[in-house]
Length: 281
Image (tube, rainbow, N blue to C red; front, side):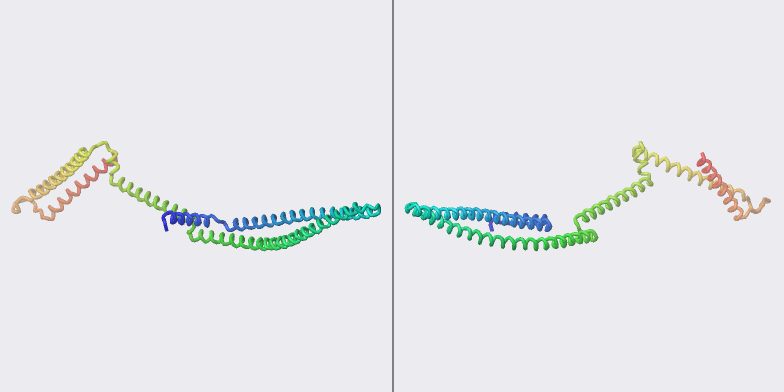
């Protein structure tokens, strides 16, 4: 098979597929019914034309028969007048007219036979049309019922073209919703970590690192201060003990630890009071 033949075959196949999809059985049946009715009308028209032609021949036959009778009278009158020549002429015309009448009778009979055949065919065609009409309506009803059932089934199963589009729209909506939810969670997370605050700040990276260093140094300084104060408190506690053989009061280790704990607790309370005052301001 050559390229052109294959291309022609493919084109015909595609066209046939498109026609099958576009074909509506109900419309096809109605069109076929109208075609049959048109044919019946043409048959009726043919019968009418044939009948008209036959009537014309019958009228000619009657005119010839009248002429035959006229020629008979002419021949009789000519004989009475001893005009044999006129009588012979009248009889010759009579014979000619009778020959024409016989020919017309044959044509009329042929037209009659044809008319009878056409009338029979017309009756048969009309019967077929009525039968086809009944089948057509039945087939249309069955097709419409099957089509409705198919639409319902496709809608319920979601396999129809429209339902497929709806399913795709739902899938796209779900994807967009999930994407928006994920984006919202990411924004919340960035907001919680302060990323947006840094992004909106007019400080550059160096300023931010310097500020972080200052904060670290302040924490370390405060921690050193706490350690120094704690060291002094411990030194004071140890110096106040004196010689055990002296006249002062004896101080036990438990008393030293208790005093240190009280000082620490007092300092922590003071820090908490300062923090509460700053927060309220």
